Amino acid sequence: MINVRAKNFTLTDAIKTHAEDKVSKFVKFIDEDETIDVLLDVDQNRHKVSVYFNVENEFFKAEESHDDLYAAIDLVVDTMQKQIRRHLGKLKSKDKESIRYGDFPVMNGDDEDKEEQEVVVKQDPRIVRRKVIPTKPMFEEEAIEQMELLGHRSFIFYNADTETASMLYKRHDGNYGIIES
Image (cartoon, rainbow, N blue to C red; front, side):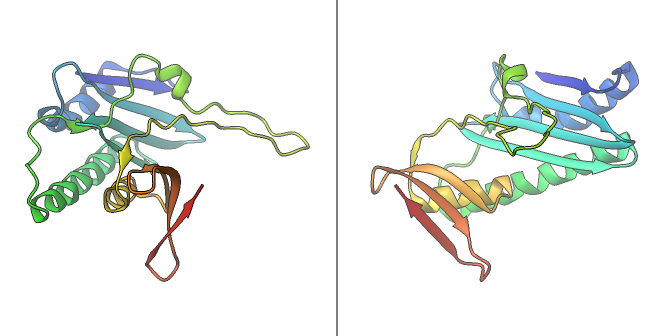
């Protein structure tokens, strides 16, 4: 199932249909009870498109911005395809089972609570965004894969080797570092 939502503008049938058509190629990766969430946002004439889904506890997320909403949708689909190809290539290279149709991230019914909340910052700095990250025990190599798939420079995970919460980060020299608690 594909869930298309609009933020800061009215979603038309043409835009919704275009987004669903483009993102429908990822439906084969998810289970029947899961959804692909597409968030379309307009901010000062800049269109931002985000796609989220979950496949076998692996979270996939892509975001792209463009002056044209249709071009932003096309860009985010290209980005997601690259992530999936990279993920499938890593799985094959490690002689793991290939993904059938259910290994990508999904935001469930509490989408409104997980969505970023905009807060106007007045004088003193304060927390303006909070994310809840479901963690499962994983080894360091798996954490590196997850961080690369998300395109982040850092990743918090529960280290299965040391049984502690750890933060993995990418160093400027291209190597990785870990901070353990």
